[in-house]
Image (cartoon, rainbow, N blue to C red; front, side):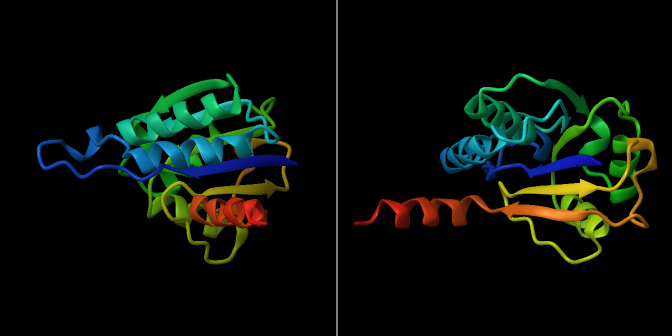
Length: 169
């Protein structure tokens, strides 16, 4: 069994003078990434595949920092402005010794990837983290025809509301 942790980049700015690839995170996005990072503490990704876009790299850095984890991180151009087959190719390139893999990127591709892997529509707002159990021993065998199980879907806004309600008397 392999575990795929999918993290959509956190909220990014839309400055008029920046190219899409170079959009930074907003302050809210930084907080979202750190909040999702705290979830990573129990997931312990061994390898992270990250889009080369600034907002994906910043999300990865903030999340791993909050989790206090230091897995190997590979930045891949193919995870920026790409499609589900290109993402599947990236997953299939991972050595089978890696059991817990994290991928950080963009929509609509990440929604499509998770939806295909679990055979049901999945919504991933900015900063959302999905955990998918894939019934295989090798990343090379990852295929939507072997449906995985959506173990968890965590939206940073929902976690914030839950944390706030837990603080109430």
